[in-house]
Image 1 (cartoon, rainbow, N blue to C red):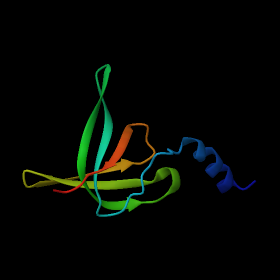
Image 2: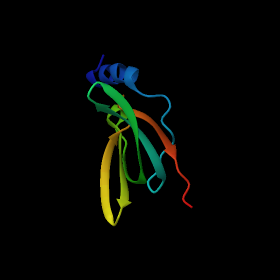
Image 3: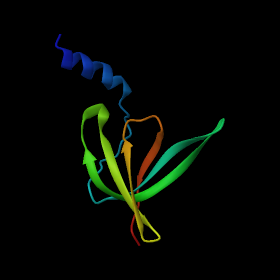
Length: 92
C-alpha cells in the first residue's frame, strides 16, 4: 500500500460530514468553541470568505470581517473539533 493512500485512509476518519458547500465571496457565520478557564462556550464570527484552501483534512477558509472601520481576518481549519458549525448569512 502506498503511503499517500494510507495517510488518506487514516485522515478520512477525522473528516467532518456536515461541511456546507462553501465558495469565496459567501457571507458566513462560523461558530467556534472558546475555552475560558474550565468552561467552554460558542463564539460567532461573521464575515465574508476571501480564501478557500482545499487540502483534504487540512482544508481552511479565511474569513474577513470589518468592525468599526478595522478589517480583521481569521483562518479556520474546516475539520477542526473547535468549529461547532458554519452557517450562511444573508446580507440585508
